[in-house]
Image (cartoon, rainbow, N blue to C red; front, side, top):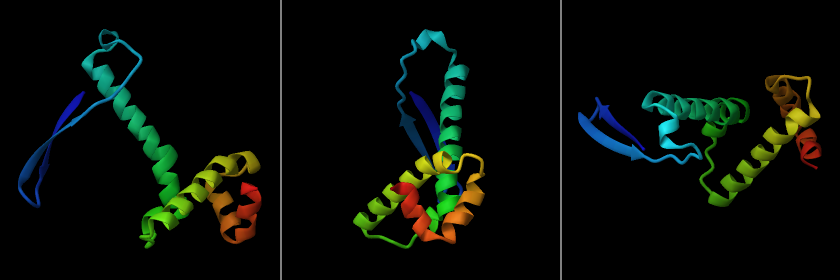
Length: 113
């Protein structure tokens, strides 16, 4: 369990949050500082491996679509491409793969097939 206090300058309000995490490790196996480091490392990895790639490569945050089905379908396509591009283009950096796929949308469908 992690408790945090967040102060928002704009509103002048302080909020308290409690987040719970599950682990197969025993509580006594780590110090509180080590637990905190594990949690921060996990979320930093999620941000780098997932959110950053989705936003910088696919422009996910710029999407103006509000239709839930369209959003779900676009997310499925992005997930498929993020999973399959390293398999189909192992020697190229993701940015370069994106440029190739961006200029040839049909190639995206071939990768997914």
